[in-house]
Length: 98
Image (cartoon, rainbow, N blue to C red; front, side, top):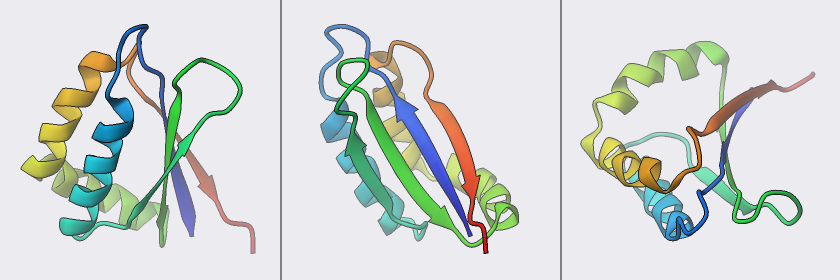
């Protein structure tokens, strides 16, 4: 199993990120992808949000990328997320140790 963590840091005055990620969470499930957990960073840059998503393997995750990019309900939300970010989100992938 792997965990994909994405870190979103809003630009100053870039409100609405929390609601957009909640919308993304719903769209992700509706499109048949693994659910997203959403976290708010307590210490560090103000307003930073994190999503985590579990996948069975890096191969399954990689194979899903084209499908995600073709899912208009998801890409539409990302088109509203990007303008409120200080820079593009950071993606980290962790693998479970058996």
